[in-house]
Image 1 (cartoon, rainbow, N blue to C red):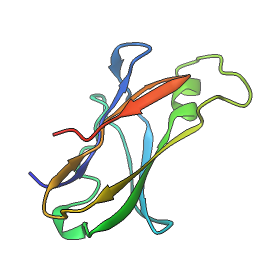
Image 2: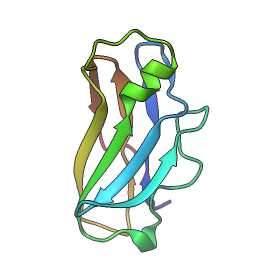
Image 3: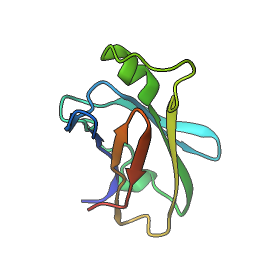
Length: 113
């Protein structure tokens, strides 16, 4: 498999984060928008291998809206409204999987498989 994929785990509930708006950007331009499914994944790759190029990318996740939709009483403003992950693609023919582990007050990521 190749291309760019993601998934989101809500570490506060121990469940996948469904219904989160996700955007992938390059040079400030939105290349694709998607919403996570019940498994916290996008139904299709965010970018296929033919759409990848060497360079810097940014993933944006609308986390504040997700937690408000769940009925969580967030502070105003929320500590995390949009989680942005900036990363580089050096091998555009490889698979880049960028998971997000998130709670209302923190997150982590890594290059997955």
